[in-house]
Length: 422
Figure 1 (tube, rainbow, N blue to C red):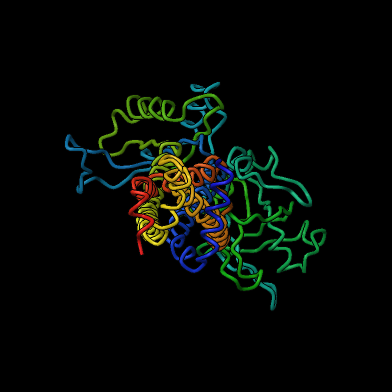
Figure 2 (figure 1 turned 30 degrees about the vertical axis):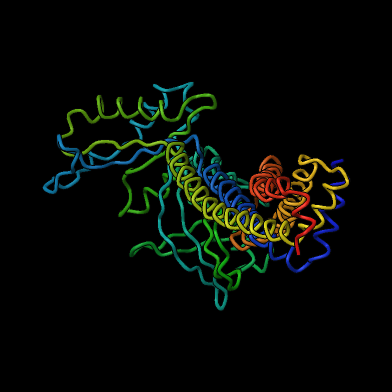
């Protein structure tokens, strides 16, 4: 009986193709909107997750800040910062020893500055960045030629540097072997420094960053030097104002952040009259961003649901028109023995078929739009299979809901009056 009703529904819909298409339009737009929003939302969530993973979602960031009063407000009359207020290397070593087993290390970076390196007509844009071993390992740099920074470099603050393949492309025409052992000369403040290139790494575009066009020379890439080298040479930024703690797998970053806050401010900065350590977890920040994205996604899906509601009302309207137009047909069927339940099922099936077809077309269009927008945003994502199946079932449920009233109206028609209808 169900298959027979589906065939009758398809025949009836094919007889009025334009009207059927216009009826489905609201369902198509609503479902397409929901699917597109799900696709883009998942792509943005994936992109955000990748970005946080690149930054280190298990990292806890610690930086120096002014102390707050009882109202949790910073003082405007705080004294000038002194050398003793900054974090020290001794403090970081003590922290690593105290939380051994809970943390994998302390990531320390010192940016010397951004500059343009020139060699006659050739040039490259670099950011000279001092890193310790943990920070460099966190960057997940892949060495293409030469060697990485080693223990002697970190301990003895040697003047060595790792440059990117983009730098080599710009200055050495892509010949990595020619670059090894060559000097990298920069001016920092009023001082002139020379570093020896000991390795070349593969440049990876940061997740979530958009290409802005231009030549390879215009790309800003990092050039890595030992952090002690950076601290000794950069007199304007020789102090440690910020560092990151890499929390061990299985440990809760939020709980570790709270422990660090209590230890630093309760012990190390307890007697400091003006400054303290501010500690926060990237995990908590990621959850906040993800919550915001989910809120926006649900808001836009709500707008798509309004389109579905309008489409459902359109289906009900056209089914009422269809019942009116086919009154004599209904009367004939009843005269031949069709029951009220059969007539009701026939028209409900027709409404479900309209909504299901609209839902399928909407899913296809929504996937196309979602993937297209995600590509423009340089994100990758797809809606879940359960989400797609849910949209199909939801559209069919819409058909039952909005098709029931017209179908029930048809089922209750008096067969004699229906046969007399002109």
